[in-house]
Length: 287
Image 1: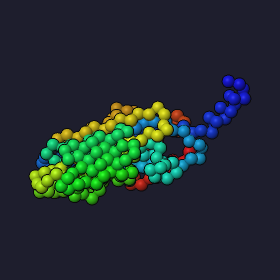
Image 2: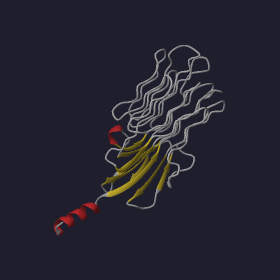
Image 3: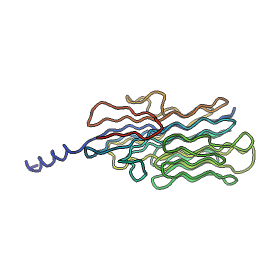
């Protein structure tokens, strides 16, 4: 490389800020019933992004999905994401997709994340992809499809995983059904539905998809599925920057538990790691 070209290269590097990110999404909430199943844990994404100095980033750290009540399914988890300038789908730079809530009688929530999110179980909602929200499940009572940054609601339920937090109850009751909600993500997972009257308890929602865009040195790991009365375990919990009590799916059962919130850690130009936890709104990084 000539001296002139080397000078240009070094000058360009001087005007680029490198940021390393590790993102853990929120877990799905547990279902309230003696036979209620746990929610899936959120996905994990890591990667390095380059920005011009002075760039403003917005970070969303999603909440875990709420616990069900009165026999209802839990809510889908909230994603964890990094955006340039403002929070919008078009401005997304890095996103970890969230886990879905479970249902009853054999239908656990699924782990979030991956370029294509996992499908739920039973009369399931589908996982989000890189181009569309997950389809809703059901024929008798149909859930809501996932959409940009939003998980779909289970049939009879109010909402899936949302932009700034996990969704509320997946919906249903002891007599009608407990279809679960989808996790939020780059595209959210679809909500589950029902195929007939009681005792059809529906299924679980789909996981939200993750997004790595132009990031380099990326890791994109799907979360763990829930099981009988137990939420999916936190993913990559052995990582040095993992924040305790985050990312896992909520336990189901007679005393259900909400999914755990997500977490974001970042390092600018190889400096110390900074931790961002759930606040209920977006948080700003000025480079």
